[in-house]
Image 1 (cartoon, rainbow, N blue to C red):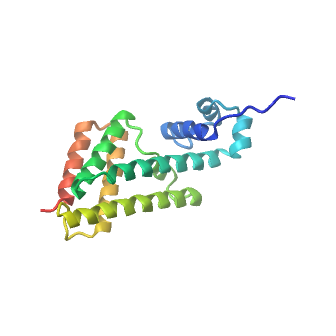
Image 2: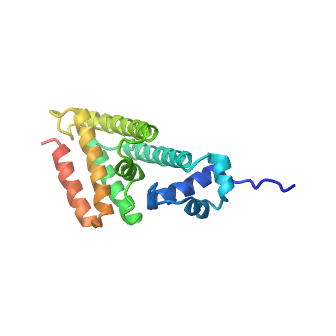
Image 3: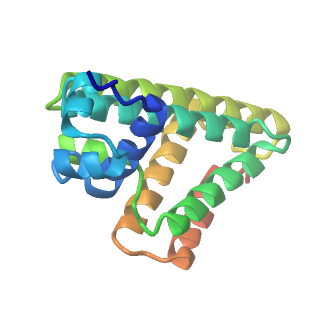
Length: 194
């Protein structure tokens, strides 16, 4: 009897994430997932039960990596406005490095809308975590005097989050670094204390 092939499940999820990120859910066939992960069709279905479950796991993996990276970035010392500047610069650098793939979460919202309750719930949870992080940065910036103190920190967080999503969409449509940096500068001006 042949022994089952062992594999690193987390690495397989990461490779599936890259495939979904590049092609979207509908655009990623089971064969493409087999090629991306190096797994056979039966191994994929035995481990993940469905393409949908693998996608959900890939989306969770992406979201966890994203919040960890942004938390580390934003928790670095610096004023509130410097933190938002770092966030926008990081986003632009990521987009340039990934050649306009955008954000898997933003791409998923565009692809699924609200038709899949499980995916919608995961995206809402990811958004809440990002907004809480950005709201904290806004409050700290208001305390250090670098962010407009007359604005609601929650609204500033929504604005910054929307700016990041917009930068990612700009990149997907082919905008270059200079165009994204111009938008980021306008956003920073809107957030900064006057």
